[in-house]
Length: 232
Image (cartoon, rainbow, N blue to C red; front, side):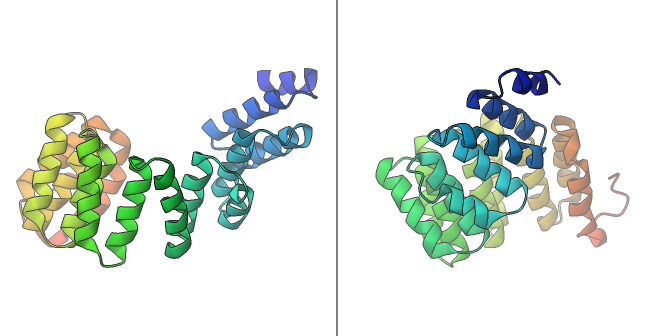
């Protein structure tokens, strides 16, 4: 209500509508966010960050095409990153890679761009090259959570369960409160048939992130033959 009052008082100030859009984003009200962005852009169409917010609103409204169109002429890092991610969700690997290469030309150590490149390579069948890129990211940033998860999941997909567990072990050693690493290690242990070890990890994941309980229950449902009497 305070922001609504401010927009009434300062209806000619694009920054106010930009702030309202940011607030709507935090509340996941993408329709109101989109409206606020449009009002801000009607007052001033020179702020790249407002276009970025507008694209995020479009993504929230499940309109990836509109988000790409918004970002098409924006020459800043966030625009390339968002567009690459949207294109990849649409499985437009070639176009996504073009934006990734643009990002890497600006910053060869861009973690997000490198990891997205690794993900695309893994799905395209270039698993070994993908693992090399992930290791490159971990060499740059040993605390990169996304890199550990991506590497562990890729190793699981390759049926290298023991190696995947070792990666999650490393992640947990570095970040003992890394809930998703416990979750993924529990999933890997379940793949091995280690029901007790899996239960311990899943319980720890729920303890650290209670909202993950439903996801964990789903994981156990996939392995019903291994999980009789599991309390999830």
